[in-house]
Length: 622
Image (cartoon, rainbow, N blue to C red):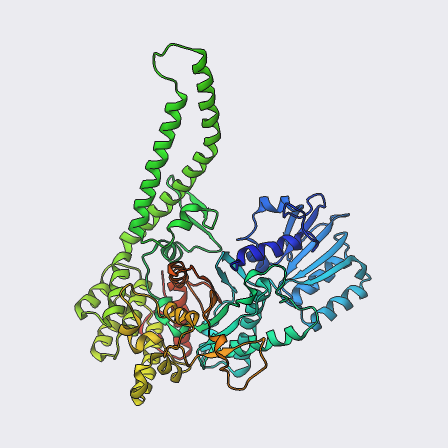
């Protein structure tokens, strides 16, 4: 049984809506028991991709409100609260209970509620004599957002900035690491698996791995253990591997333009929580949902944009043909004599036609939706030459550079300020050495376009630190991962060290290559130095242990600290599908970022380091 995070999290939520009672045979909550759902903004985002408003009614939820809104009392009805364990939320719950807003309170916290907050809740409700209103308090371990079966985000904003901020003290870093580890703990608790943990040594990945390892060890010692891998968990004998990485491992993927459908929709149209709004054909904004219930999105998300356009046309022609077929069958034949047998035949055809109508209507809606999205995308692609950006960036990655005139031509050509800045940064990352005159020409071209180049200066600074360190240690330069480790803190990416040997013909990402090596479990210089942690094993000082922990693995959870994207997600899913037998990879990240959002974080870091701010207007305008 493959790990299905979306299904598991949905089951937990439905059980919570059923007042944490076992579900009935149909897998729904008891709908006769009416209840009210109260959530905060964060938990609303958890619910939104998993459960629709119409589904809430199925589970007996008649009203739902945000916790910070003013609400009227509703008597004789239980209230299900689903909120983060925070001081503000606890105070609000105490206030609601003291006003007897609802008959009983079923409190569900998205992660484990700290002891002091639990005490505040107890003393507050005792003080207002409303403690009898509180039926139950549950830690749900659901503090993550699942967007697809194999894709999740911890929705923790600006992690990259916080971890790379030169002014951040140890305490702030520890807090972020703790928060990331807690989010990952929730994911593992929901899946009910204890993985083997692998990560590069040094840097945020190792810090998160160590904290998570300790959390899992502590929890496995407690009585009410969430990881009793019984209950028909078929693959419990074959544990998954959790591969942790930090965004600096492969910086370029967070910045470059991609021409595949899913990353393009996210990057250009701002897909958020599986929803996006685009200009409708007849004016006005249209809002669409893109998730696993949309067959076209599932089947074609990883195709290049031109292939998607062809596929839309194919589907439309097939739809027209099917409609014509229905019309032909139900229309009778011209001039034919009317016979009784014909009536029976016609009735049968009419029945079939009526039955096929809902399916045809649904197909037409999907085709119309993607036609509209593709039309808007095409407009953006033409206006900004996005196809050219994607193609030239790819060439730069493979060749490790670009002709100077071509480079400056792009920077002076079409595209938004952000497109040009992203292109310039990719050039920096790809070049093995910094050519001073070329960099100055780029900076001049960016100034001409009034681009804030803080992010460019930040990457340049990191790059120069890398190069000086690398040349001092050129002996180990052949071992890319080893090289990246020595540059802990500033390791721009494994790519910079030797683009050519990390990029195969079909431009496989370094992340995917590394995950493949970790799942294979064979000796491999790229990953041999990676840390191995097994929370189920006795603690060994070295962080490397017996060979069975090295794989091979059928299932992996890959987690990117500091921001992930649909490009990495797509690359990992393609790798998993290519394997014989098919492997299973879940991809997660602290937050899913578009190229623009990630470059904005680099800009903030550049400003914090006092780089490049004076050259141009202080903020990127889009």
